[in-house]
Image (tube, rainbow, N blue to C red; front, side, top):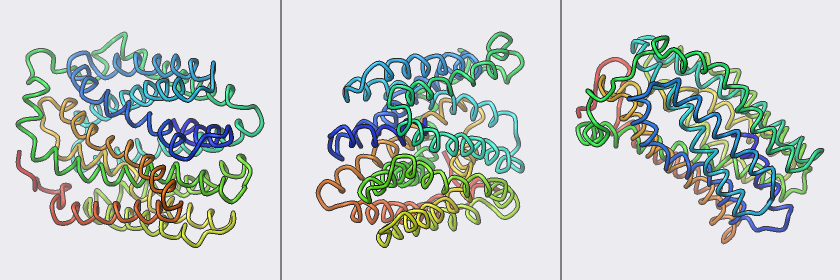
Length: 372
């Protein structure tokens, strides 16, 4: 997914399209995740996490092949929509399985490990995306994204063949999707609205950083390396995130982490060279590393024991609205007021989300604080 998020804005802007269209196509992956969320939760509760994972990875491979066949923005946007929705299905099926297996006292470390592996893939993806666009062109870059998805299929195929290896799905006897969302609507809104704000800032920076690099006339390979540098900090800090969440509480890790993300966005205002972009990316990377697995942990903490995947899909739907909003905010704001204004808007959204987390959600790691 990160290969596409880095390469799509570069490919489209270099091809002569504007910021708004580039951001719209980049945000199509988030739109797909939002559209797929509820059906995926329903399917995971009934068919099991592994079967959903295999089908989703195959869909990602097919979508990447379609993207490699053309550079038309409409086709790229539709294929990215499918790719993003399928990648959400992989993530949600894994989270649902872990939520059912792991107690709350160990959950922060387990989810931060999941988040850390995702950050490692993002580190590879940002470097690969920038280098391949620079050296091999758009077609091979999009094919590389499909190869990345194909690599994951053998990991979940045994579970799909033998569902008993994973936690069994609830099946038709469990509560339906709508019933789960209705009963747990208060928990859903508390966790989901914070996730929406956090993801708006996270995904917005993924589009903003490459566009800042283009505005500074940096080479695509340089842009990929600069973005990847921030993810190096992500990768280094994810074990600390889980340990802090389990030992000192969720807020002790999440407040400073997302605060650093806001500071890093604001530091882009002073970036007038590759060094400035690097510093801003590192600050955001530190914050993002300290937040590894935090959204997974928060939603798992408040998830009900029955209809777990359906509830997580509801939270994911709200969170993934932020995946759509982030690139759109960058595109629209940058078109009308410039890239500096886009950075300020993203930072403001993140600060507002932190206020919601502290005063409305509260600590979820020790005792339940949110009633259905």
